[in-house]
Length: 321
Image (cartoon, rainbow, N blue to C red; front, top):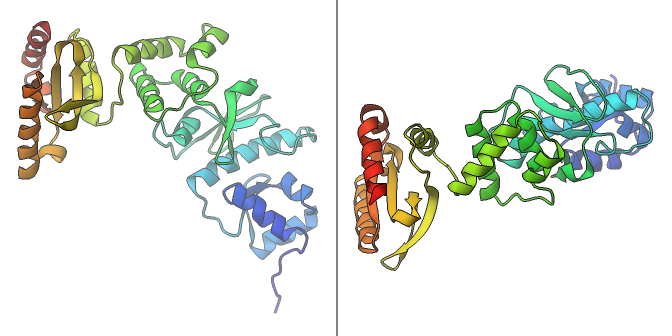
């Protein structure tokens, strides 16, 4: 009976590095830790190295976390640069391989996660392969950083890259999420717009920056996301979203606030207001807000379909007071 054993060279160092890199490492990193081609092959045969991409392995098991898949894609792209003869660098950042575009936005938490594709930006031209979509381009030092051990584009650069294939509404939502999470950087989006004039997606970014200045606040629910284009279609001014107010000795967060008109609109979805207790609490807070001098109107989801023109006319009248 054959006993499966692990190579004795650098096992502790391998485990430590794999832990820092979400369970994955590259062949060239194994080589730097003293593993020869033969020892790597025996590790694969023994079942403690599992191939994820060419030249990239998961250590101990095949199941990777989301961050593990991102890191594996970064290492795979760095491995390709190594194969082209760049032997001086010892980590993926120096090799010009970073998580970018939609994948970077997901890592930053400003956009949903795309399970099908991992987007990577590399310094030299490189073909996409499998689930990895590679973008080529030089990134300045102030356009990249490291988050939880993963080389990634900064939030402003991520938004600028993603804007090229996103709607203006999607760009605006990313900006609002970045603002909500206070994801600021030493270089701003406006700096990048000046650095890359005429870049694809620049118009969407400019429009989103202007909209964000007009109506600050995080747009959280699908109803709020739907309410924004409704206001635009009817040429109504945008409010502050999810704003905090003090009334009757209490602090309330309201869905939509036009501060100059002291108008509040609550967007009532059944999931948040469909119980008897919620119904009573809503009426209590409306009363307190009216006593504090605010007008309060409530809009249901179906009314944007069934009574769109009437709702728009009523809002216009309330805002004109």
